[in-house]
Length: 439
Image 1 (spheres, rainbow, N blue to C red):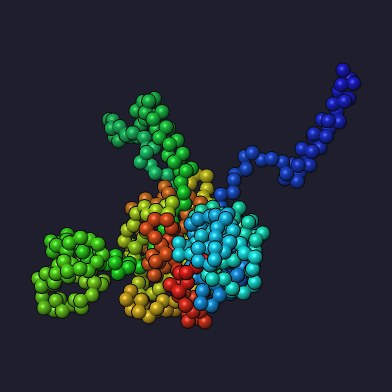
Image 2: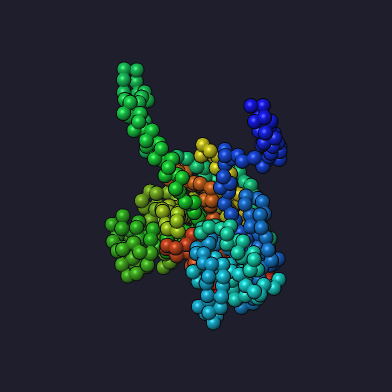
């Protein structure tokens, strides 16, 4: 017996020693450790020809890159990875190999490996990556990960603001029953069966949350098409028969506007300048007693598909909104609080657009607008907040832009793609249409 114990002693001592060392060095397996659910965010600087991969505010990988040369300039803005292929070949440039391709737009912009990655713009519009780094980056990302292409280096930073959305569980499926008694209305679980049913609904709601995909939100100014639709809708509601609400100012819509104007005084009749704009919609709103016309619109998507959209208002509409991306880095276990990150991009607005949407003050020469100042101006309806709260998880994001949904944002198959136009020497470079023929 003593001999057996003596033989086991070194093994026991060795096991203890290994465990002690592992514990002291932090190498012991921690089965209770939470997985790191913070989303990956990729930022490319055209000026530095550099790509950085962020997890939260931490850079976890970086590399030099080569963006589009003159005449094939890589567009700047906020993108998402739409498609990933380990093997891909160009359908425009002699079937050129584009391994570890990660698509950013359906018109052809992508991240991909290349044997030629000089530290200056040399591609036909894509972002070229060194072969070994492209493979590493491919292993880090998932479809939907945000990619920001900026003129110069930017980085996400923590932000707290009461306008930013906060998560919550949809209570409609899990609230207990109510019963009236002599003491007044009191919350009561009616029976053991009701208790089991409530717990089952709660588990179902929590399970549904675990399968959620990040929600994408865009806040922007109302487009001309949206204004026309609103005008058509108001005309129809007020009995002027504008026809289909399709955003197209056809004969029926024009005739309806003329009938609406013809019922007013000559002074109000002279108000219409033949344009389907905010003053016309405001006249219809005033007739219906609806107050002021909303300046903006909010769009919500999930899994590259539209969920819902709604009008919203913001203060000081004559000031630019700028271009911003706010991302949920993580939420707490109770899903009552989200940590947000913010980054802002320089963006210039064409004078014609400034005139159309009523922007009068361009305060920054570089097109940058402070993120906090923009959030201060937003007025988001509570019903919109209530719809978004149950959908909000790590990786969800809010983009803000003056320019509406870009032409790269398709009805399905993309997140919101926000295109920016840096100020300075880049203002004379060719636009996105001239780089549609991509790798």
